[in-house]
Length: 380
Image (tube, rainbow, N blue to C red; front, side):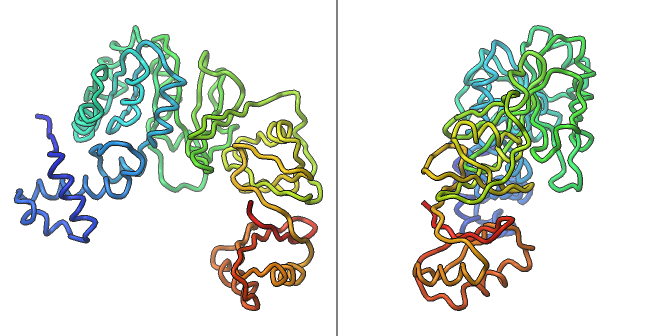
């Protein structure tokens, strides 16, 4: 029997969560049995923590909320994969499935966890879509395989550990390679969300593939792997909510040399950094590379330029050793420093304090560290 949450009850529960009430209070305050109160508390807590990902009060548990695709990303996936019939293998509480239903003629979700199947069905009702269905089944079952003969596209966002030393496909549950093997005779195109930090050479799938790095408001959010006919280019970057796209260009040199900082500095979006499409970004912006490591890339130019692939833009004020930077900050009436270079986390505030202790101004300076010198900049 399907369990349905009372949306009015959940609204009251969210207010109680925000007010600091504990699960032990919920049964009495809401007038429900203790086991039901615990379920309501868990959903309300998830809604409070992760509700800003969605435009509607979807029902979800804490783990689903943490891992659920942001609605803007789900909508982008659905637009790119728009088709006749699409299946979401391991659909969880149905957030991505709902977006698929908005753009494709029919969307099927398959989920093994019965509680999440119930949540997905209720979320479909909350969303008001009538062309989506969820079934409680194992994606490796003959029952599911037999259903997909006339489907065009299969999508899967496999579960993966929150933290792991080395990201590989082995850590994905289910492993995309096992999914591809099981459905190899069905004749369906596949796309997977895989760990964004995974190195491309570790994705040992012998098919035409595209790695699409998705940025959400300046930070790397998703890495989608498109296979076969769904792959359009070797790799790409999409920034949301704008939808701007940067694509791999094989004609560009990859061994770009660092130059000295010029008048303007640009902190590059993390998705571009992860994708390695720095030459492509330089080509369309006319910028030079001033700094690059595994986490940050800074470009520079004599004339100010803008790009949706820049996280932030700065005006260079001074370069030199750290004492030179502190003197420049004093002359610019600065009192706060933001360090835009790598510092061990336990040393960051000590380093910041040592810079700020002689400053008395009210402006903020951004300090970069390049191979040749420090640089002080003002954010534009």
